[in-house]
Length: 568
Image (cartoon, rainbow, N blue to C red; front, side, top):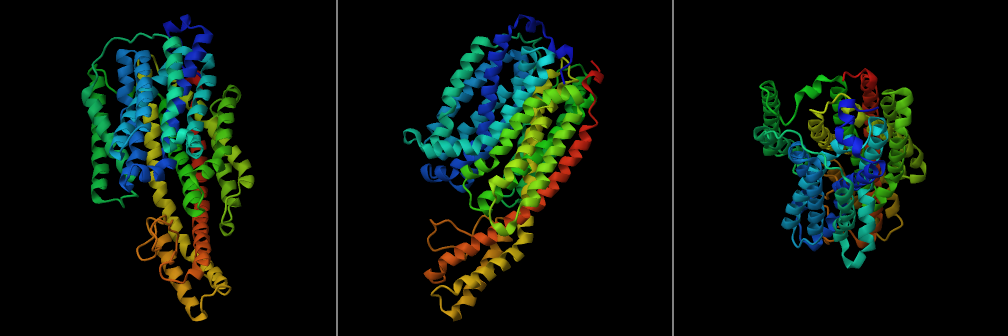
């Protein structure tokens, strides 16, 4: 798949030697790698932040979400700034800003300071990311766009998946006794390399005719996106108070006003932030729908697997990252082979990729055994590899397909709108799946607790707990375990059920404060059994639902035109 000649063959491109193009492209890949890693790498450091910076639970949530929030809300505005002042200049400033803010995050002395710096880091990441698509379209001739966009997609996808594993490795290594700070400071050498490559090899693509910024569109879109993504990101943790629901309603009003304003501005010959004529092209419209839906599904998949592994099975974030590593490897392979398949079967490559992803989900759902209390990576490696390959086959050509109907006049708007759509998709997917998944955990809790209670009853027979007290222990365990697993926050111990030592990790049904110490080992075992059974059973059901959605996306992708049929 390729971009139209009006985009791919810019005047400056004839002056770009292959070596220069690839080195400039390397700077873009390093930049996108850092930007995507930082969306997920911080999650594993939250416990350390709570201790080191005395960060409250709300502060930890903001550290994790403000980056994505700032990133999504400023992408379209950043793309316009690139059109106005030159993409090379904006990319270099943004890349330098991202590197500096990363270092400042790594030296932060307080939670509030870190939150503010994470927001600035997200703005810098958006400013660099919004230029990348347009830059790549200039660096290479259209015959190479399938390959380079495949590499771009592979880098972005794999980076996000590797975040927890890289973060866990860096924290475990404790380089120079810096602990969690290394997850930010690692961007310094990478950022310096990217800055040098970009400064030396990125072509100086002159901006077009200077147009006004569309301040009204910028305010409406940024405010609307903020009011949409913030509630979706924090709704479950805050139990969806009325003010978050009001924010969602206001976001719909503002984003609707934004669309109508942009349409009127374009009809009057103005320069809208979002060019709605992009949606006159079927490939862009269908591709945008696919992108929104896929990133919702993709975020939902990783959320459910991560939550089931960490809260249900007690895995660390590092171990969870290792568990999903085969998927990341498969995604890289799928992205690299997608240009070959596109050359042979065209847009059907995307459908094939989604079918492979659905096979992965269904296969994984079938082999999950809630009674086992574990996820065996040796058994999961094959379906995860297949799912990763399918994801790479879908994402890499999707980028080029969406852009296949753009022109030189609107490719800049597309550069900002595509990643914005992806971020909205991720936010919607996480919000919806968190509700669905934890509802399933609650639905599975009774049978899980009953089985664990039976095991506990048998286990207590080998302890020093007096026989008259054993039924009391079992009943109290069942009460607390049911309360916790059927609550909106099954990862948190309900009041009256925790240990007296609040520094110890809480588990479902933990009644150590009210029973003899001799029963504690059996209670821990029963709690783990109940949690593992309910979370794994819920995971299996949710994976089937996501698989059905993936098959629907495969069908929708068949609506895409072959690129040679796209009007130029």
